[in-house]
Image (cartoon, rainbow, N blue to C red; front, top):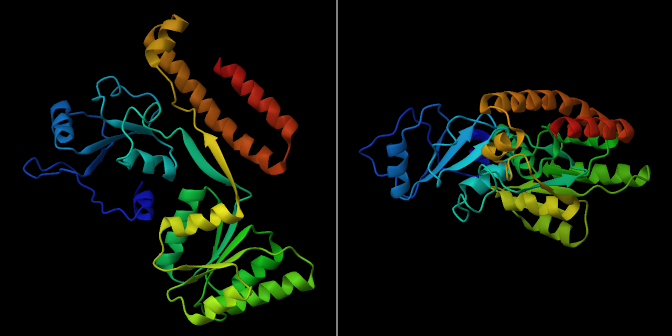
Length: 303
């Protein structure tokens, strides 16, 4: 959760308990404890505090007693889903199921290389790309490492810091372009990361130089997402994990005691987690026949 908060540039603080003498108006309170002080939560909501409950299970005994205005989200969740729960433009009624966004965004063919020598910026870039794009990220810290990997891997997008040890970003971009031309390789989009947008970078970009864009540091999430939108294929994936789920309706339709239904659901979810590893491997191997078989079996088990 903390890495998501960092990528949102959020001002946050972890606490063990609330100070009831403090005014929390306008803030966001996130909790995932097994206990629930209804009066305290209701008081926070009355003070215009946005209350978010994070559940470690799809089914939790707290859900039937939570205030209707408490937003609920279950792990695992994406950065975009978490952002929508925190965003005050959305309320509990406008979000599906337990506060999880109805649509998550991913980028097809999202294999991204990042060359950044600053540890803080490196971690931030990796977090932003993973959270916002759901892409596969490879991190390196020198220009020569970026050049070597660009020669042996088919990346869909490359971010390179302009100032790096041994070979700067502009020189690295030039060497990658030379290799592509000499070996008749497709041109991979390269975006320069820079603290200063100097004339050299602007001139090279305007002249159709060795890179395709630049991001000025400190950057915002939208600056990075702009290039994901431009060079990768956007996919909107509907999240139906919690959408429309009503435990009471399921219990009534099955005709079994609530405790038995919950145990059956938990068994199915545990089995599905195991199947997901196989599904990911089959997707990577492009073995769609076996993939269809597993999906059909899983669908059958969910009925």
